[in-house]
Length: 472
Image (cartoon, rainbow, N blue to C red):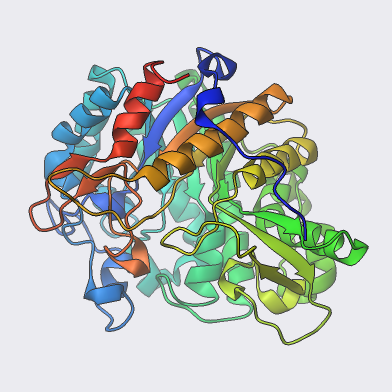
């Protein structure tokens, strides 16, 4: 079994390596922090509905109130200002802007996001706006079959157009989709995320429509809003897959796992089509792109958005019945024939994700090599731990170690030629963590979900010092 290449030490990070224009931020998503689920004309989303199904969400939690960012965003932005970040990644609630997902625009929703954008800019914080972070308007799911339906692409472009038109004078950094892999696999394969579909075929159909919605939206933006001088891209998630052994079969399994995970969504954007290994193994379950669609997809991202959290070993399954970590397998497990495992020496987070900083560096190099050295922005990176308030303080030293070691790995990647241009810590606040409810805390600010008080953890204090140059 391979061993880590090296240990990383925070004291060795040189801020100068990242450069003066490096994007430093934290990230959130609308459904996870906003609350205000039925305020000021907002329509229901698939997550509002999913949370009402008994047993789907831990402890029966919902996002109805979440962090109450809906009412507290000005105070939250003050925290961001104090933290010292120059950017903030947020998502827009489609059903807050268009309650049915189509037709009528809700002006109260527009005003809400205008106020957030203006408040960020007033505090010298650049907004990075994600159009879709999983909270599809419920009406589109019920009436049009959601991401499986024929109308979803046009509906998404229409929604995006409203956002470009109403916010694009100030928003210059757009992300079409957050982690379409999650929508496809967890939402339409395993059914553990909204809309709760279970299928071996639907993940590939949903993914196909997600990619086409992205491509058409980018094309629409470039053709109609070029005067706004903005950038637009997509964010994909991927964990590193290290070969379990030096055998050729495990090396090939590792590559195959990465192509099923990240290549599934990144290859069409950079090459115009799915990875050949997916075509070979999936057959007619994998939809085909037309020549026109391939042309539209290829080059449809101005940057490479990456959400990265962990690393696993990959081994060739060779047709055995081992079902190791199907949920993390980057595709339907049977289709890629890969077994995943972790080294029992690796520290695990509350999500049981291994802390492996060198995997981050290897993934950055893999992306750089495969996709011709694009500008990369890590749009999420973080960890959940069992944070406790002790005498008004939260000592999350494990999270400080996580961030510091992953950033040290990022610094090395930059020195070795990777074009890493930005880093967003996940997450700004403890929040509604999907089917885990409020049981998993990723924030650098602790949220008391009874009082909704925000308390800076040691990691927030560390980040403030780091961004101000006091740690080097």
